[in-house]
Length: 223
Image (cartoon, rainbow, N blue to C red; front, side):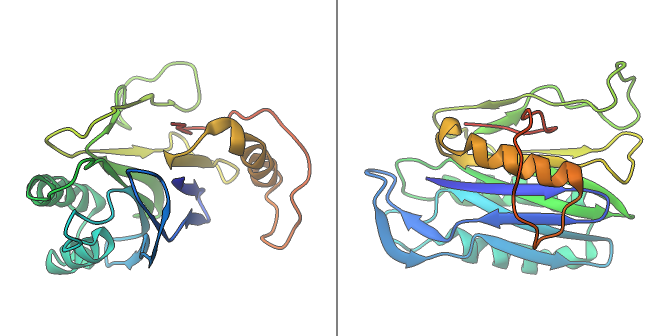
């Protein structure tokens, strides 16, 4: 089981990801700890980046965490907007992952942070596709926020695709919870319900998790 939990609000961004290296064939842990989260503090954008999916190739010559750090560094990500970073990751990952020897090449990168003081959530993946994204200037429905739907494929596509989602008419109490990865939703749902309760109460990090509320957080994706 490997997943990324990301919460985004006008004031805070928190991302949690595991560091375990597991075999795709039998799901058993491998004696390795992996870098699965990076923090980028740039001139135009600040964000955290987590990933889940293919960690190493057959010969263990590829390490996704190391490749990701190198790709961002060589493209000088600290000087770029999130739109440019996402586009570069799409191109670089499409080329690089095509060269890897692996049975399952599915991978997803999740970036969350701020650009010009506005929070965003960005995904780049070769198996997760946002089907009905809406640009900030597009005509909206009566709903305050648009909730995109996400399609997840059983096999990796030949190309990586990115999507950036932002809030509409954001207030200080708005938040989004995004969960990506490989796990059973029923097993973790009660924990996410507790997380939602804390976010609604604007609880401090030290507060215990109490209460159960309807799980209806914006932009949450289960696999």
